[in-house]
Image 1: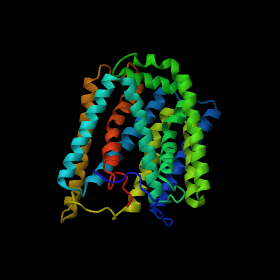
Image 2: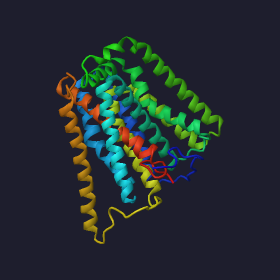
Image 3: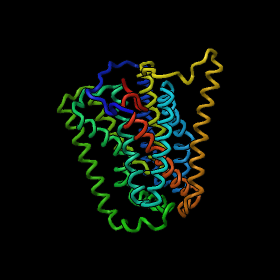
Image 4: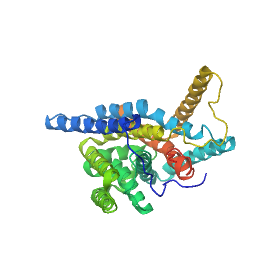
Length: 355
């Protein structure tokens, strides 16, 4: 696992109305539609209860988005050497175990790391989509690319922390309670100050990102990036955080990563035997189905073990709300190696591969 995770110099791509661009358009329309619906409901005086929000989250994160995470790992490992696959799996499980241990030892630090994971996944993955599709001519330096990743990924957590503080605090409380009831009380008095620092910091970073991109070339790539940055900020500002996060990943992250895959399809070098290298199409179908099934079984096995070993699986919350808290913890635990092992350590051909 070696090489680069954030590629420099930036990729220049000629545009055309191909399937990947239709997917990019679909991701934008999806967020706009959800944001418009949230604004419309608010204007009509309609408030979604936490239980309703929770079911929307679970539908988005479990039913719609979870399979894509497995697909990213499969696409990465499909043509890699056998020893690499075993090292990859070993590192993945070791990091899962380490993250679980951190939650048991210091659940508040575990929560902070979970927030970082969401930011890193949305940000680093998002920049790779720009690289492969619309281009990143306006991102001229490595620090500038890191700023772009921090702003795009930061919208997922920083804006909701500022815009929906009570909801964010409540679910943080339940998430920490899963491992140690009441542990969040020690930092609760600082939450209001943190809220303004985080929200204000993101706004300043977003302005710097957009302004610097314009100063260093502007153009079409800057216009797309700036527009999407504003869209992300507006989406998480307008949509209740539980719904916003639950639909962001399937409507935005996964859809756009499929667009990236289409853009780089066929350009991934083959290091080892293809996991789907069969003579007959039906065998390919069976093998692909079997591998995805094995990944699903492993995922839910980890979830089941975690559910059994934690002191309070639902954090003391009602069923749907507690399920959101548990799934948020679980998905962050399996997403940490997704980012670290699948990208930062596997920098040349990782899950966000762009040639």
